[in-house]
Length: 164
Image (tube, rainbow, N blue to C red):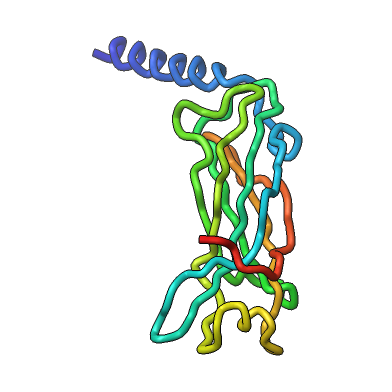
């Protein structure tokens, strides 16, 4: 009985090592992903509590310039008001699922929106010109598989309305 248990545990250990070794060395996503910011601006999030709502948003494309397939590639966008260091809102998307983003492949256009933004009674275009309007920026983080989040870029959010 004990020999079977030891054999089983050894099998599990070797299997785990074999699976861990299949992916190759970790990819530095700062170098292994090419980030293209296609557009930024303010998305019309509709009417909330009788007021117009605008949220910061951006559209990006990612290209895998590493030497490995990037499985389960995820993007986390952290939005900030430019006058504040703390997080204002977030957006999360899956850029490539279990099939991964292959070597040299690029994603389709990916749009990320914050869940928080501004509300007002004035028309949306006028909201952008309000004296209390504070511009925003976004920090972009990526991870694939079980790796840690890596900052891959940051960009300001343009003070423009995005087409629906």
